[in-house]
Amino acid sequence: MREIDWNTFAYWHMFRCIETLDRLERKGYLPDGARENHLRRLRDGIGLNKEPIESFLNRAMIDSLKKKYGVDAESTPIPHLKARYNVRQNAGVDTSYYDFTEIVKLSGIDISSSYAIQSWLRNRGTLELFSLWEQAHNRSFDVAVAERLINRAAPQNSTLTLKHWVSETKAIGIVALQGRYGGTYAAPVIAIDFEMWISPREILRRIETILMKQEDFVRKGGYDLYP
Image 1 (tube, rainbow, N blue to C red):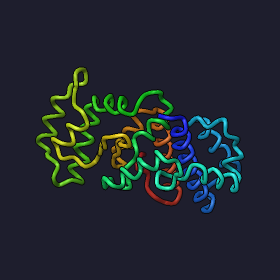
Image 2 (cartoon, rainbow, N blue to C red):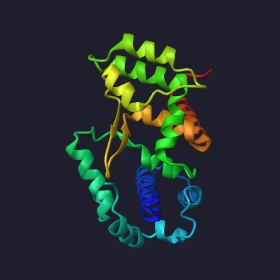
Image 3 (cartoon, rainbow, N blue to C red):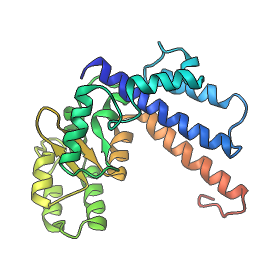
C-alpha cells in the first residue's frame, strides 16, 4: 500500500470526525476546548502528527485538504483509489459496507489486509457472528453448511478462506473482489467486529462511546440499561 493511500484514509477519517464534532457543537454538547483536544488525540493516533493541528481547526485549511484528498472514495482525485471505488460500484457492493483496507491502515498495524483477514477468520467467534448476521439478513444463507464449516474450522489448523465461506454458504455480509483494484468489504456490524479485533484502541473508543450515550440517556430521564 502506497504512503499516499495511508494518508488519504487517515484524512478521510479526520474529516468524518470533524463533521461529528460540528453536529455535537451545534447541539451544545461540546465543552470548550474539547474540539482541539479530541482532534489532536485522533491526529496523533492515526499517524498524521506531521500535519499542524491548525489544519483541522481552520475552515479554509480543511477545505484545501478536502480538495487534495477528497472526503471519501467517491470524491477522491487520486486515480488508483478512484479506480478501486469504480470497481466496487460496478460489482454492486452495498454503499454502506466498510472497506477493510482502510480499517487495517487506520489501525496503524504494519500488516497486509489479506493477512489480517485470514487471521481473523481463524477465530470461531468471527464465523459465528457471520452466521448470526446472515440468518437475520439473508434468506438464501445455508445455515447447515455454515455450521459444518464452523465446527470444522479449528483455530490451530483452519484453512477456511473468505472465498470458500461465501461460495459455500451464499453469504452476502462480506464481499471479496479480486483483481488489481479489488478489496474486501463488509456490512457495518461485521466490519466493526474486525475493527475491534485488530485494534484494542477501537474497543476502548466504542465502549466509552456507548457508556457516554447511556449516561446522557439516563440524565434525560431514561432508564439505566447497565445498573
